[in-house]
Image 1 (cartoon, rainbow, N blue to C red):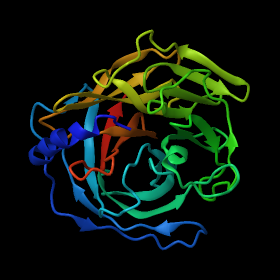
Image 2: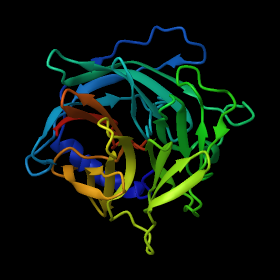
Image 3: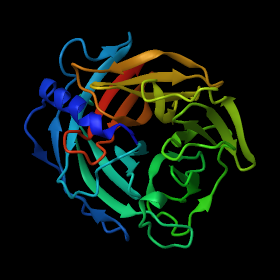
Length: 326
């Protein structure tokens, strides 16, 4: 979660003015009957990349549509912190309050993102099966599916990764899995996690990337001697490259009073970062991007980016799509 929330409203108010989208439209409600899930109301509004000079896309990257998920002040869907795809246009996310969220992507005939539908949520549970109540217990920041199909969720404050089993019916009593042997700061934990051939990989917001399995974690890149700060580009989300070579990562930077930026890069299997593929900044569309999901599309990759609005009215929950040709 972004720690400079008191300044974020200024930055995002400017972004709203520069990058206002079209009118809101309704979403198709969830009509399923899976136990434990509750339908959530929202509207969607189309958004573009904003004013010229904002978004910078590398060769081979094209914008493929974007929406704002417009939420009521009391909606349980504020503060979405990560994003993964579940097949058949489905997606899954988590909130900073300890809720698991699912929905469906709406695409047009050309495959461009035009909206979301079927939003629903459920409260995550503690190891004893009780629902999460306290913020210190429920500050979920990352999620990933292992190659075996298990849902992993990372939390900060009480730093941990828990295995909740199947996403459709999460285990009432999650199982702890290995995390890096590192003293993460209270509010700067494992923001990004993703699947790997070994098991899973975790990225610390203050730096450091580890690959993990049932026996423990090994550093791919060691945390820097001087921890990264809000002004640095810090990893806030990651997903496995669908072609099997490393991961895509989203990074966030904030320099007061209004310079909020996001970058997408490819991370090689050894933890080395490649060139910047996407940069979002003012005067274009920008926000507190913390989620990224990747899926194979022919010979290329479709990327989705999700922002965390922090429950802060001037900010927005944005979902943007990009196509990266390899």
